[in-house]
Image (tube, rainbow, N blue to C red; front, side):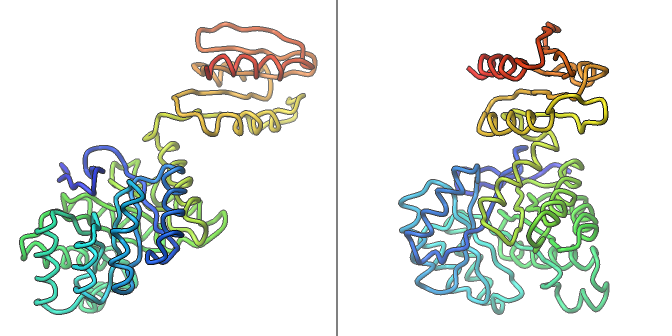
Amino acid sequence: MPKRQVSVGKVLLGGGQIAVQSMTTERVSDVEKSVAQILRLKEAGCDIVRVAVLDEEDARAISAVKERIDLPIVADIHFSARLAVLAAEHGADKLRVNPGNIGGEREIALVADCLKAHHIPVRVGANTGSIEPHFYEKYGRSARALVESALSNVSVFERHGVEDIVISVKASDVPLTVEAYRLLGGMADYPLHVGVTEAGGGEFALVKSAAGIGSLLLDGIGDTVRVSLSDDPVKEVAAAHMILRACGLERDFADVISCPTCGRCMYDCTGLAERVRRRVASVRKPLKIAVMGCVVNGPGEAKGCDLGIAGGKEYCMIFDREGNMTRVPAVTAEETFFAKLEELLR
C-alpha cells in the first residue's frame, strides 16, 4: 500500500528511508544533560529523538534544548492536553499522545487544533498495556485488538482534521508485534513506527528486537524504528543501525564477513576478524571485507568482496573484487592484509 509522507522537522517518514529513533533518559528540563545525551545520540546516528514531558518545566525546556541541537524532537505526553499544546508552542517537531488518556473531546480538539496550527505530526497507536477496554474484551490480548485500538485512536484525530499521523502497535512479545504490524500494514497508509517495546536488557533483548524489527523491515513494513533497551539509549541507536544493515537497508558501512571456523582453520581467523571489525567500525562507505578460515572454499564463499583473506598453516591467500590473488607467508599475512585494507580505506 502506498504510504503517505510525514515530515518530522527535516526528517521525512514514508519516503523510503528508515529513520532511527531513540528516547532520552534525562529529564528534558535538565537542559545541560539532555543536550549532552542528544549530541551523543546524534553522533551514534540517531535521526529523531523523543523526550518525556512530565510537567510545564519540561515542556518549556524544549525550546532551550532545540537552540543547541539540530535533531527533531518528539514530545512524549500523556494525561494532559495542556502540556501537549505547551510542548508544541516551545518547538516540539512532533507529539506522541494517546487520545484515550489525554482527556475528553474538548481536550482532543485542543491538541488537534495545535497540531494543525504548528504543522507538526502526531504519533498515536497502542501497545499491549494501552488497548482500549472494549477491544480487549472483544478480541483479548491479540494483534486484532492492538490494530483496532490504534485505528480507533487515529480516527479521533482524523475526525478533527489531522492528517499528519504516524501509527504504532507495539508489544513485548515478538510474534504478536509482527502479526499486528503485518495486519496494520494492509489496513492503513500512514507511516509506521516499528519496534518491540520493553524488549529488556542484555543479548536477548537485542535478539528480540532484531527478530521483530528485522522481520517487518524485510516485509517492507516500517518507516521509522526504535530499539527499546533497558540500557544507554546510544546502544539502541547502534542496534537499530545493525538491524538496518543486516536487512540490506543501510549501505554506507564496511561489512566484515568471517568464517565460523572449523578443524581446518590453522590460523587466528577469529582474532583477525575482530581486529578488522574494530578498524572499520567507523567507516562510512560501502565495503565488504572477508576473513575466511581456510583456502579450501574461503575465496569462493567470499567472491565479490572488496578485500579478503583465507588462511593456512604455512601461507594465506589475499584476494580482491577483481579476482587478483596473492599468496603470502602466514607469518606476515596479517601485516600485508592490513596494508591493503588501509589502501582501500583511503
